[in-house]
Image 1: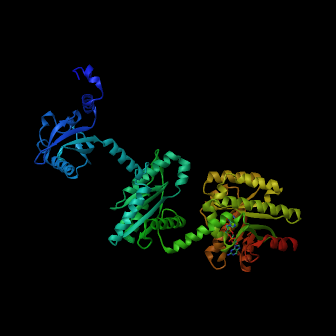
Image 2 (image 1 turned 45 degrees about the horizontal axis):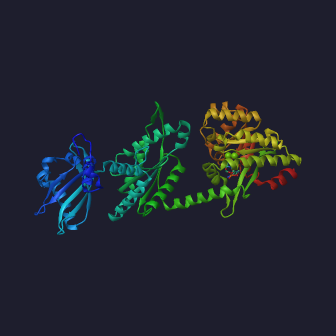
Image 3 (image 1 turned 180 degrees about the vertical axis):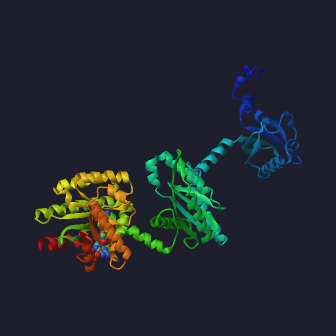
Length: 576
Ligand code: C2E
Ligand code: MG
Ligand code: MG
């Protein structure tokens, strides 16, 4: 090699790829390679002294050209030297290459992860004469690996440990609880109406909210708990070494953490969370069971109202599997012809005639037998099945009306119950309109029953009701008096009928307050020009009471229970 960094081979060096050329090439490699390369001589007293350092190695720590001939302990800080000495000794003992990873401090004080391979070189007598050490900076690899591990175990959005993390940590938390005979609580936390928030505010706002929720859940004043994001708007907390009382306090604090509004784009939003809690060991001895049971408890908390916590109990299990059975059955009920419509007559107290009926759904479950609509309608609501079932009811009632018309019966009007979800369904008006047209029925024959709960949103309620009135159908408020509608609200809406809830009718003869409420509703209806029906009338004296008070119609067991269509036709049309 010459001084100008040019490598010039003399003629005689072209005789082949011999040791000389090899030497030159290795020199180049050693000079430019980024690995730290040292060659150590094994001294008689089993110390190791530097005999060669490549350029990169000279950068390391205190090593310079002056280090040549000196031992590890001469050059390096005692601890580092001790550590390396051990590794070199192990090469002597094993008589084969040894590799290890450690922290290496470079000349520029950068601390890097190094991976070293020490390879022995043997003399003719079989003794190790030299050891070649090659150290590679693997910091990038280590960092990548750490990043990948971090990402695998953390949720990107909230930075909280994720589901994989939960699996790992929960198993070890359960093991620890078992070893120390302690209780452990698992809390399943789910935001209330998050889907609605996300749909109306957009995903960016939704993401922002989830991040904030993560922060609030992470800063509850209690030590030693861990929060995980299970996915979506679901979070899980592991509370080790706890008791029912402590976890109850914790759950209350979680609920409290949601009392302050969340601020997004200068607007305030109130979001609440529901919590299901399971305890180790009584509610489950392994992670999966604890999660499953906390989920069941959460479901119950939601059912009871939102922003609540609920502990798991074995009864819940029965409750939820019953619900599951209803849900699965309900999905097939329509196609398996298990649903039927019954009609309950409404007696007109002015004419003593029956000209209207309420359509009430009946379900004959093949195993459970008769299931009350009070039980399955909420399931149908929750699962969205109410939309297809509701459509089926409208279709069926309209078909019946057409058949009765063709048979020369009637005229009658039929009340059809609309559940809140159905009422909010954008296609509702079109569906009703189409069925009316197809069956050529007079729109005034249909009266749709809505509860006050279905009319929460004034603007939308007004719009939908206006469209329904345009078609010409009638509207009644069902279970009137049990909701919270304001009187001015009732005045503004295009309503035809108020149905007095049966809870007021039941004791109307014995309870002065019930009597006062029903009388007030009747007067209200009269002054607003609305028709009024009392529901759940079971006794003759009740009929008398409503007649005297000027109530238009009564409906109840006193006159008739809801009847299957053929019986209703037989009794009210043919034998009229
Ligand atoms: P609702 O609309 O208030 O219906 C009146 C309920 O009172 C009916 O219960 C009826 O059978 C019952 N009833 C009638 N007369 C008497 C009586 O004299 N005494 C007593 N104790 N009860 C009486 P049902 O059929 O079990 O329905 C319960 C609820 O389920 C209904 O309350 C309604 O909210 C809902 N529902 C029923 N059918 C449908 C439907 O087709 N669609 C929707 N969305 N909901 C329905
Ligand atoms: Mg009704
Ligand atoms: Mg009712």
